[in-house]
Length: 324
Image (cartoon, rainbow, N blue to C red; front, side, top):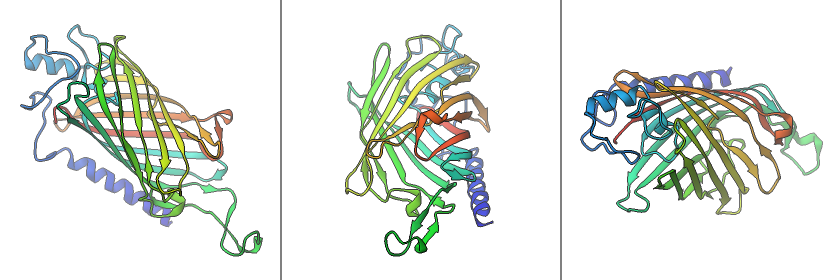
């Protein structure tokens, strides 16, 4: 019962936060039909079009020729990890089945993507992403010792756990090219988990890289990679990898690979490589731009080693703030 109440409270808090964004965001109202004075584009020029005509094309997910571009419209920017677009995101993931565990798991992630102008001609923007997960785990198989080593009389079940997990910060110094963009940047993992079962209790340094090709009309193809290694000798080293394949369908719609990262623990040899399919749309709600998508994920038995989600479904809602 306490676990269910925890999930209900977390969901209510997320809904309240989303409702508040329909009002004032950082003290400003952003409408689809007006452009902030400091709005800039690092992807393509205005081509002499009137402001209202251009923004109407962005709302429809079209470029100047009427077809969606991989990184030249709002829907393209929302799915590009190197784009200069502020996002406030809520992601709710339900996992009904987990390898080497029983019961269901649940994760509510609070995420903010914030770009900064650097004034540097080679890396004109610095894109940062901060994620704080609220986790409710499945019940792992096995038990933990609470007494003398190798004494089975002092073992207790691991049981379900609920609370905050570790805070994750990654960033990319972005270099635009004629075919897309690439970037590198620093990151870290902070031990904010409220229970030891929900994190590694370790500070980690997380260098990050990303390469995104948007030269093929209506497509984004690339990769995002993160390498975590502990700074205090407590945690484990791991490599995280996200294939990026997105097809823009027009009028704000898109489909493609999901945004969950594949994980490889370089010390234990455990890995998790879920297959993912995403469908989403950039839409106008309460005079603001939102990116809403659903992802289904499945991890076949041969694409994991160790505990890993078998099935999962994610609902994500992001407030998009162009030009901020």
